[in-house]
Length: 220
Image 1 (spheres, rainbow, N blue to C red):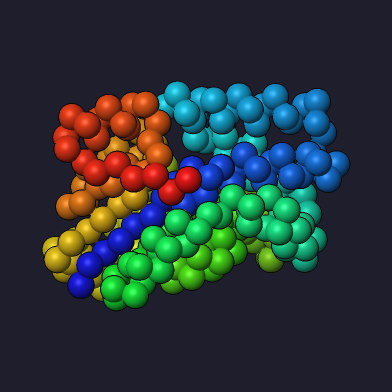
Image 2: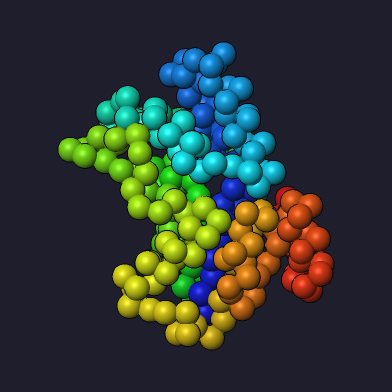
């Protein structure tokens, strides 16, 4: 059996769902544009530079979930999917996922973006498993804080390992393990799998892939 892991933002998507979700809420007037747009852009630049404080970012990103009930959030998310996400999903990305599904691989989306935002996107791709940052909730409402280790940098390995344990599996159970990602932030997990693939990579990851002979793929 083969294990295939897919990063989401700027890998399967030609954009960043975390960034787009905040911009969508700003466009709806849910978040104040003057206050939040600059912060959203600054966090995104930190992520690209590899200097993101994940806990500060999650405090910013998860706060709106705590201010609204789930029914309203789900309604906004359906609109968000149609307006912001579907245009970012290209045919090559869909074909890549489908090829691995058709081959019988165990396919997993592994993303630092929280599971509320990414769950419907994962289902849109037909990927059966999601490993993501988990937004904590109590009594049917989000608290505005993460639960457990965020799925970011080395945290992706932690959360994948937990998921494997829950599935009764381990890395040695797979003949081949593949991870597709665009970001140098994912170097820890890319270095763990047997077949790392750089997808439309940032400059740091592109250079690393060249040094180590990793394949480079474009889905744009």
